[in-house]
Length: 70
Image 1 (tube, rainbow, N blue to C red):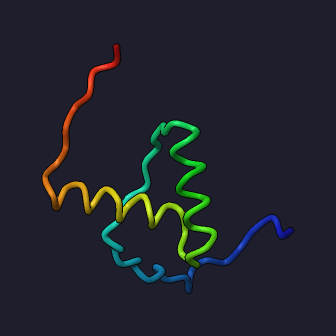
Image 2 (cartoon, rainbow, N blue to C red):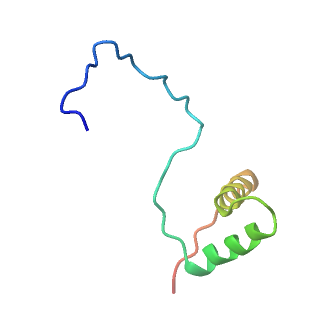
């Protein structure tokens, strides 16, 4: 590798457009993740896309309920 590079003619790269999605870290039950992966295997869609759709459907029906652990 060269010790010095001439960057005098360098320009700024293209700006990446937002896709409307953001990366997060989320903890899901192992059984939930396994079920979505199994469903995704037969559909040709990714399991993350299926989880996203399930969340959209849940919000659309406004059936979000909180269940307390007992």
